Image (cartoon, helix red, strand yellow):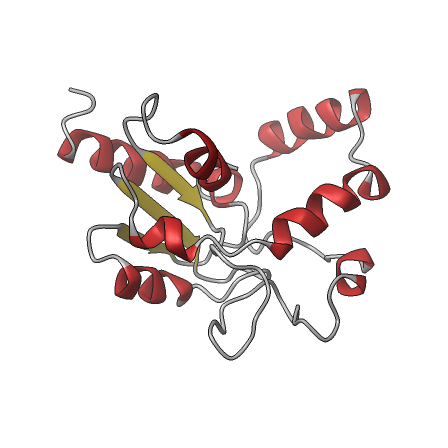
Length: 166
């Protein structure tokens, strides 16, 4: 979402960005091998109708899990309702935004993410060496839920190094 925001509105309201286990290009092809699971142009968009499977690798704290479940009961996720948004998202290639990221950016990837190969972080650094990346080991796609302390420490270190907080 923030890549789209920058593309449309620029950086004027942003001081920094943090990406949690999201490749800038979801469709794998001969120019990018770090897409979402097995999504390619030959199975796009139908592949996005399939169940994604479990997003996590590590145990999510029981309290956090129960709070998320309560939120989901109030407003359940509806894959059919989200399908058009998902197609639009998967169709995008945000590498041009990555190459010219106008504000400091941190990318945190789950070392055991079932959705993205965490080595996409190296490819991002190849596109823009100013972008900081960190792979959180023993963690799936939901880095903030599975490893909240590691996520917090990584984000706080990044923000402090960029003099955005004290």
